[in-house]
Amino acid sequence: MADIFDVLADTTRRELLQLLLDKFVASDGDVGELSVGEMVELLAISQPTVSKHLKVLRESHLVRVREDGQHRYYSLDPAPLEAVEDWLVPFLASHFEAEANDGGIAVFAAWSGSGVPGPIRRVAQSLPSGGVAGATIGRAAAGASHQARSVIEGATAGVQQRVIEPLRKVFGR
Image (cartoon, rainbow, N blue to C red; front, side, top):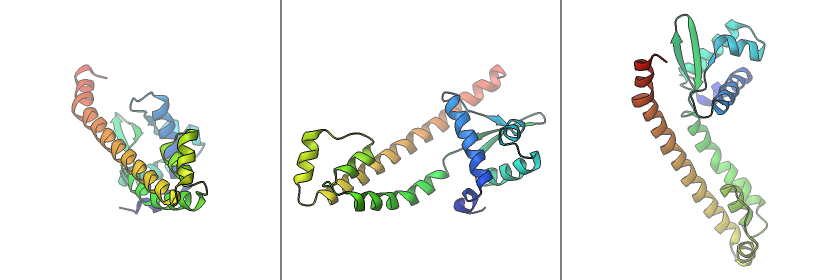
């Protein structure tokens, strides 16, 4: 199997993943499938080219395929992207730490995705090592967020596999 970074290095494969992500988001939490034909139409490239790239994505476990007669329906499987996220987080944390010239509070705000109220900002700015404190809090928040997301995604996949798919088979959907 190819290294995940080699797989993601190709522009066409990233575009295919983006299409599948967009479809998943638009499907409001449903599977978010696209057929090969739909992807060919959306990207305006040949079917053999799309199929070649989907094979690489499938072998890297970045997509799932459902066969229905002669048709293939693809959906995104984000689990392997966690390795990319884990690799990137320290680089992003270092960037925020280097840029934090306001006592580290910007680092915390960036990681938490929230604004910081004035009183908390003033206290953080008064700390002698606020940059380190903010970066540490930010990393801890990012780690907790990543772990929670991983648990939720795992539970969702389990429900999909053990409950939804059997029900779809029973009801023919």
